[in-house]
Image 1 (cartoon, rainbow, N blue to C red):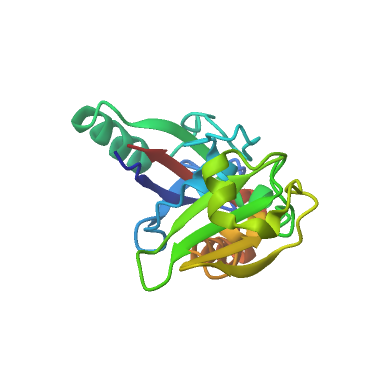
Image 2 (cartoon, rainbow, N blue to C red; image 1 turned 135 degrees about the horizontal axis):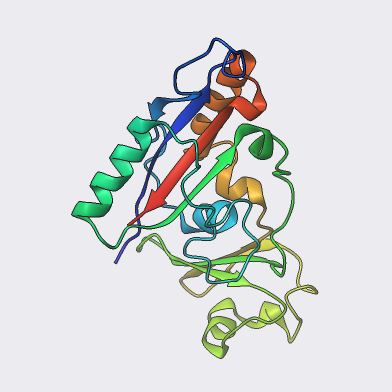
Length: 209
């Protein structure tokens, strides 16, 4: 069963700390949906600890709903939870935190990824590669080029084994949430809003089902 993401971007009024300010400090600004519709589980794992099968340390995992969440955000979450009791992974992250993410970093314990694809066939299958290859079946499909070498010893590249195309390459945080992904648009909007509300005055609130 697939996992989908929901949520919104919130902004904090620059005048919220003034004595005369009497409204909600945080306001719902924009739904996440038109910006991010991709259920890339690597992104979910790296950012929020959801579908985190490799045990990566998430940036903002399971923080819950912000205590000062806007009434609109809180009401939408409560309504979805009423309709879908399986909603989980509620958390939030500020633009200040996201702006510091190193897109060139390699997730801990990951040497790379292998894509195995039949020529003219289906999109293929990805394999996450740590210190070991993981299975004899994968090694057989990769062919003799591996030659008993460990993942760290085999150079990245692409080659053909019979009718199978094999690609072994580095995988970075940017592959999951960088340029070319839906998250590029989310971050662009948050960065633009930070110019008005400050990096700590823009945050993303998300949850999953």
